[in-house]
Length: 432
Image (tube, rainbow, N blue to C red; front, side, top):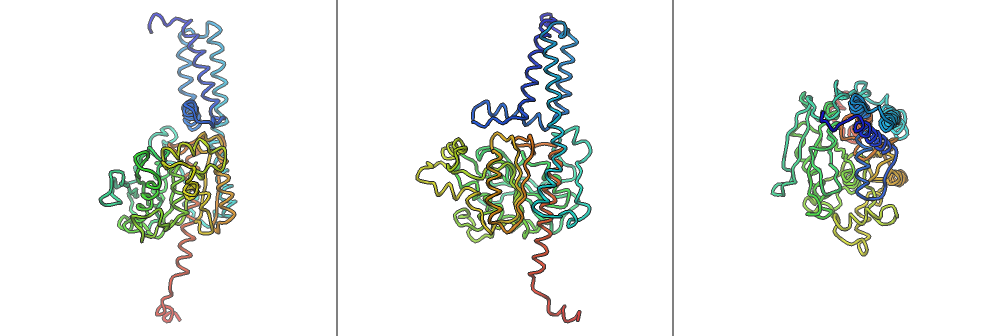
């Protein structure tokens, strides 16, 4: 250790560390809702720490122990710093309890929407467990059970963003339902490799096929280019997914943040010519939607949306809101709800800094008024934006609940499809 690192320096360093640890822990339980550079800093602290509490405590204990070894407790700053650190560690524990307890939140959400749903599911799928070691290595996103067909072009002759990946179980698939993952990133960043890897891995291992796409981004492309690409991808899935063992007649869509907006809007605007000029004859109907911490309203009808509307109008829609109000309403999932909506499972954290939980509540309330299909809503305690990016107990429970919801939607879809299929007259006569 350098000579200048005296016990006095160690003592003040521990005070600084303790203050930092306490500040980081406090961000788990608060949401900075106005858009400033500090919003991003606070979000990052609350997001990473709340989803990896044991790892954070171990790291902070090691830092504190190292400073104590160099005499940090010899003076009052170090003693106060260690006290703050202990308070921070104790303060993180309720968040980890909430992460484990989120299973109850998900179960209640499914039960409210589906009734006594578990007996209707295959026994082997009611309990999903993360592969060994994921708790110790939450960033290990590669799943050895999954084969990925990479960079398939879904819009021939189009740009470099028009690529998708198909995730298939190494054990193979035949007639498997399909989950389309739409990445987030504020409509101006992100890629198909970065998000929802735990969800896609678990769904694929359970017999689904997952498709993740890239789409055009702002500011180079203005909305609705993003949604047009999603529709093109859905059309590609219906035409080609059988080649990978998928069932083109059942497609569920999911995504987080801007991806949640696009997934919801795709589910609510099936076959709308405004959003599929490049595939006007394609059937873009989807059978279920699972938006996570999505954007459901880009209008200025609520004061809390002012910063979002300002950003969206300048950078994404690239049109002034004034004079184009109807365009922004048509681009808002909450204003496209109706009896035509497929089953929805909406998930949002109550401390989300970017997509506030009030927006998700409002969307769910409006959807439930008119939808003829189940609408489930899980509001997760002390949960930030992007909570599903890496493995945690909460993500394990989220994957399990989403799998249950979509599996039941698929089973019901299969039942309805069988009931509506024309009878084989010859077979009936032979049976009689």
